[in-house]
Amino acid sequence: MVRLVHYSDIENVFDAPERAARLAGRIRALSGPDAAVVATGDTTAPGVLSLVATGRQIVDFYAATDTVLDTFGNHEFDYGPDALRGLVDDAPAAFVSANVRDEDGEPFGREEGVVPWTTRVIDGATIGFVGVTDPATDSLNPMAAELSFDDPVAAADDALAAMRDEIGENGDGLDYAVVLSHLGAGDDDLARALDVDAILGGHVHSRRNEVVAGTRLVRPGVNGEAVAEVEFGSAGAPDTPPAATLHEPEGATPVSGLEDALAERMAAADLGEVVDRVSEPIERTGAVVHGGECRAGNFVADAFRWALDADVGLSNAGGLRQGDPLAGDVTKADLISLLPFEEPVALASVTGAELHDVFREMAAPDVDFGEDDWWHGHVSNAAVVWDADTELIVEATVGGEPIDPEARYTVAVSEYLLHSEHEFPTLAQRHRIDEAGIQYEVLAEYARERGIDPRVEGRVEIRGRPSASPSTDGGEQ
Image (cartoon, rainbow, N blue to C red; front, side, top):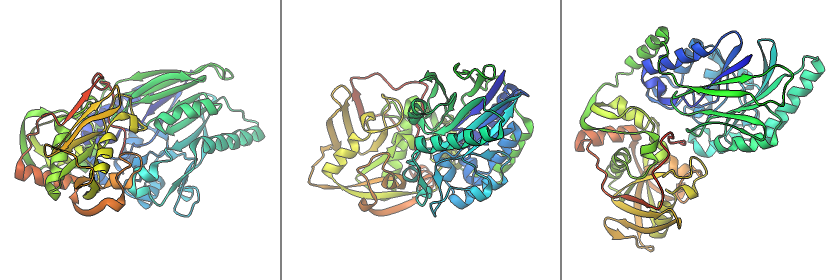
């Protein structure tokens, strides 16, 4: 039996070294001489330790798990293209990417060893791999703005054709073809367009395990909540989709050397300052932050508005990173884990009509990622009533007053939302009029001065649908 062990979007798992070491232990327990370990992006960032180590904590993880291949997620570019090139050059895992182009329009990272396709012989079978990244990454991540991203279906098709041509010429034969994908929902398009056995995916943070158009599609979720084991049948049986199982890391023996290495990196950052104490734990699971109004979202939106004395504070739910609840003593590291982005809080000036559009864009119908019932925004000094059946805003107020379409309002937001066309497309750089500090610094300053005691108080009311899916988490930023 030929197997692949697959992880993706592990992001904040490194902020708890023991949890990362346990995840590595599960991967090692699943691996073996008949298997290869592969990843599909957002493995280097974001997170507290990622910020401290500029993503290089993944080098320790690759070595501990014997990861052989990875591809680029949108967060691999968090520290800029040059930092990523250096990491790729030093990593024990190889990177496979068919659709990322550098600042000059050339395939990204070729000098550092990035390839559009590659093969590995696993237990006597030859498996071919192609890697692709979300083509919206230059919009999702300001640090990738100078790069470009080819259509992933066409790029993967070209890479597969080149791989099959070369293997045919060498006479080796190809037993299975696999796409390492950081596309999210775009995996379905790949499955219908390409002749491949499996698409190992990421980007969207909900788990997936199904067959589409005869191709196995697997996605293990976020922050190491699961590891996928994909089992291929006998060589020469390409018409049979491989089987897949999602395994949770609980119960695995942590890799002690990895835990020590990550803990040492974290200790060097000196982020243990206590900024406030929380008596009632503040949850930040995916079901909570995408379920409508929540305490974590209110805290962030309040801090943003406070920092710039804005009319409205707005936080995108996808920017709030999943992790353990904020409980007891809350440290600066805890706040970085909630918003681990080196971006300022920006101030935008919009008309009332534009603000109404922004509020509509908090709802799932206007966002092209995640689950159908996800809610995508949190507000301060504002209230929104959304009817999911009619897909209309029933009521929208600022400071208790209905929005005046002709008036102007200031909105404090993540700088990302002014750059991205992926979320809240009404907001753009043309609306920017000021900025405050880095997001997690703003949270810390707010916590020191005003404390951390957010309440759910009717800022968002969603009518006509059940609460968000319990196994999901924010997928973007």
